[in-house]
Length: 218
Image (cartoon, rainbow, N blue to C red; front, side, top):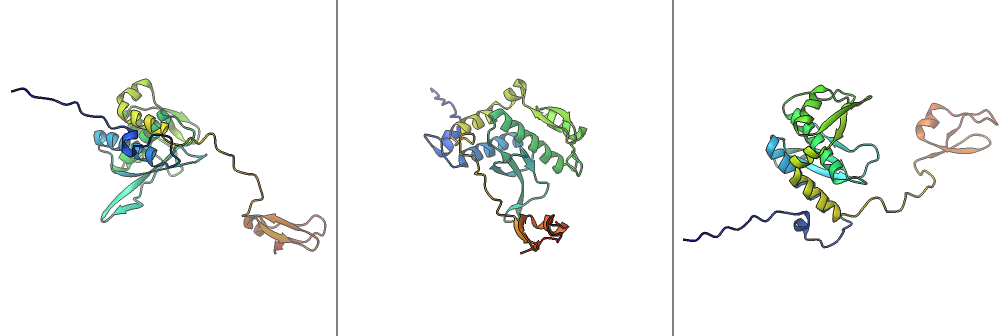
């Protein structure tokens, strides 16, 4: 009897939502990162997590040690990943970095101190996932690099992320945030003039150079 075998079709980011062109929605890259995380977590027994994507100029990623998401009685940690102006390798590196935090948290290992300093325990965990970790002032062993060897180890997650980025709107060609008056400033007055400043600055005390009186909220 002849047996017919069929090759398994690999899933691509395009298959997930069947989008033919770039989309303004972030659902494709978010779904790809979810799939990539599932692959990584399966191999390393990392806890399930809700993947959140967005823009940030200050952090590449973040893991919440508590569980802000729930589905009935099951709760989930959150992994936030900044996707703007970043390559697929950089996104993979952040995903692995935050997954390392999640494994440490699951096992009760303190890989960071209260001020965010990454210690040698975190370095060992992250390098166990294939990353190269180097030290930097204030943040410790946190600088993350995906080498060719690491990329080869996680070739499937990397492929999903690469394909998803090609289908997701870029964040490097949009219009810049317009410069204008900060609407969070509060008006304060003295006898002869007025200023706009933050509530905390006004509360701390600002004195007019002309009349010598302290500015008060209008």
